[in-house]
Image (cartoon, rainbow over all chains, first blue to last red; front, side, top):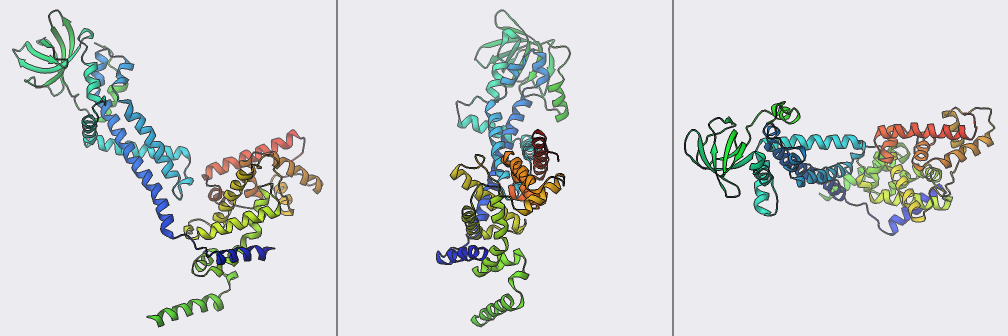
Length: 250
Length: 209
């Protein structure tokens, strides 16, 4: 029986002139999965970079002081990048799992490896400014995309809640400046007593955020006046700002 | 140029045919030779066909004729994919993997696995599991056979697979990992759970182990 089976297979191979598939076929297949992993990890890292950009642009210490609640804070992060990250991480895991020795890794380890790759690369991309450039590119390419800037403008364009932002039109004195908000309305800002924050220059054309009290006649008494872009702190300070809100909120 | 090629071919043939017989060559050497000359694929098949037939029968409810058909398909697939074998794992593990996948695919086509799974229990199988699981010696052999067969039939397929590979095919954890394409930790967990479930079943049926 034994000889018969081996012989019959051999005969079939010879009769049908069956040839082993060429090596490139397998190299290509394995390479395709590595490529899937590589691309998915790269795009996942991009998505992480963009999410980090969105998070660190929030300026937590100021929004906490402004009394912005968590749902509104979360709304400042474009969900599309979080979803994109999750999709790419699944694609990367699938790619790595289907490589020749991918099965040796447990799912947990695969997730950990992919998360680590995405966060390290994403952190580098964010630090190198690539995330911001991508954000700007996507905003230009997709007009319907509600990016980080638009979300921040919304949060900082609520004068009745004490949050105002816009472009300085002129600095009238040490106590008064004129500002156009992002909706086009002109405001008189009283800032003599205001705490200044971030890389602030107080010059014409500068974009600023102001925390204070709206008064009648489009006047706004500033208590904190800050640069539009948040001050850049080292990562550990940023993380502390996120997870340890100040005790006295505005 | 032709002379050199002829000389090389002659040297190769002499080495292959007179210096060493196929039985003396290991699997990897035979694979390399088979890629040059299909005749060397036959001793490779002959080396594993009994094992593979037994394995397919152990994890399936197929008849011997069907198992032979599966093994034949396994060898054909092995031949077609021979250049995919890179020596990073044992050739036997690679063959068992193909056999396992082919059996599963045959199951799916015929929708029989788990419905009326009948384990093919030969002498090796009868003797190996009781010793591993410390089945009492005093239980009569025929009784043991029926007991083991009955218990294994009731285990989930993945548990049956690892028990068969570990205790009946005598495969290491690493080999089982390569065959089933699961991480070693998962294999160890599956084996432990399979043993526990086997013992639990034995306990439920009031069978002393």
